[in-house]
Image (cartoon, rainbow, N blue to C red; front, side):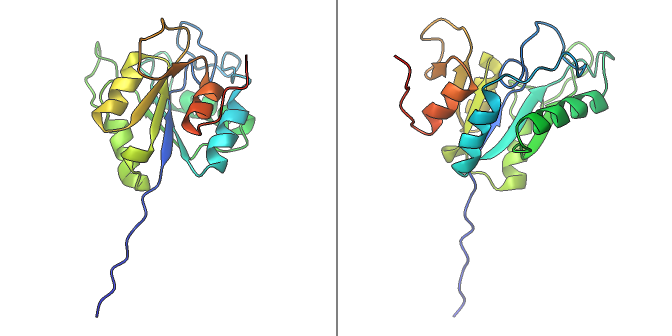
Length: 181
């Protein structure tokens, strides 16, 4: 009699970069001196990692296609993020294209970056989340069955789940009551 192994699927939190993990500058961020990790990020990532989530950055980086910076610049910023957060991020996916230069299904709101990560890490979309600061982040998540949380100063009701920052998003994911009045 053969025994079949049931492979357990992983759960993940997909994280947009600019505006979620680092300060949004309103312009492309690629210089290390401009890449400022938000103060709540290390705590948020630690909470999620301790709860068993894979942490995967999903970011559009159109400045590469525009010739403003390189893949190495993106990876250097990722390394700075890793150092600031105790090396908790499991993977970084980025879309270097821009519609004015090249079309790409990787670029959010398309979901190819998430789909590639889900295949590589055997991720169950039903137990996973996307935290983003733009509606395109949530659209990419919805395209592959991942729940989304919109962060930032959006009008109430813009998204089904929305909050101020990544730490508050982690509290929603982990169902930790908000301790603020």
